[in-house]
Image 1: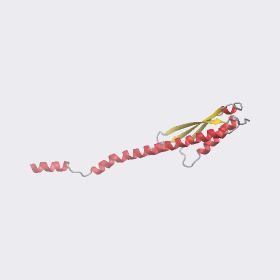
Image 2: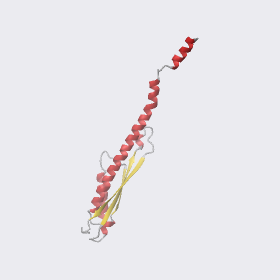
Image 3: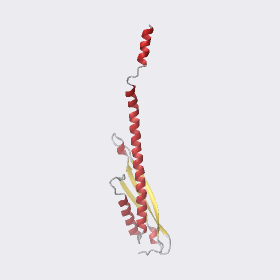
Image 4: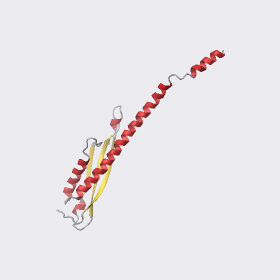
Length: 151
């Protein structure tokens, strides 16, 4: 009888199959962590590029002589800054407040540009896409030269 009981306990203490169970539990968690890391990196990169685009656009707009030309220059500069092969933005929006270019010569003014970038992250979900567009926004203000001629 003691032999029979020892046999039952031996079966319960057997470690066969534990590695498969552990792998089945940990692999999906690791995959999710990797996808979250990729999404965070994509958002961080888009934020940095959006900051640089806003700065370039505000600087380009502040160098123009009229508000209309300033808006056009800001749009061009932002799109050029975001036109890379590895850019994560699916849609780019540029809003420029160029009213500072209309003030009389000798007065200090500024130009503010806001750039928005829509970053797709739904493609990281392997099954059927998913919800996944995040918007990154960046603004930058550039001072207009008070003694620069206006047109």
